[in-house]
Length: 250
Ligand code: DGL
Image 1 (cartoon, rainbow, N blue to C red):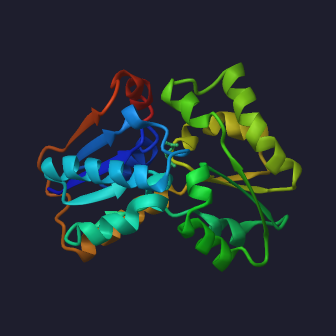
Image 2: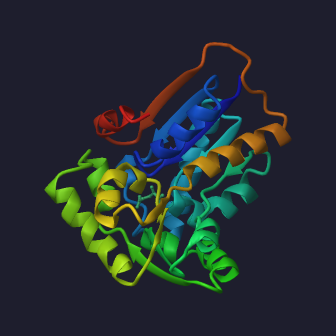
């Protein structure tokens, strides 16, 4: 049985863990929410790199065979550093889903919601350069989204007004496809869908990141599904209570 380490600045990475559990239900998972340092989105790249190293050390100490960086911001700031500093460890990062969005849009306008750190990272800029040629990409930081999710406010008037503020400008620009570029945002999916309406496609990259994790594990010969008793443990650098509500969505 493999031990899969998963981390995020907080509870957002649970949206990735949820997809991993669908594909690989029989493994041992260690989820780490670095919520004492959340949000990562407005911090410097150096700060996020330091946190990513610290959390990696904790997960390796718990026996992780592979680490899923279930955070777009940490992927943008730190995945290259982690791969260079821990060459024996396979790291899976988040991919901004610009490619499927660009291939599927009918209006020719795609909207990207992400943190400031992700939107200025070279990974996103490269993907945009590669797949964004024939489409118009409009971007917005999902301001306040992470705080909503961390506080377990996933619906209601407050969630609606915070989400509308960042989403509406993308819809007004004609976006018919919205890429969720932060792992917290899928927990606001119901609110996002109710504002965007049925004709707008919302892309959560978590299922494709989970599929990629499975293929990397196969390539690396990391053993899976051997019928031992699976388990998932949750750790947090701050208050663990904030994760509890979201665990109901797994
Ligand atoms: N969930 C994170 C992401 O995917 C980080 C959000 C934050 O801490 O700002 O970007």
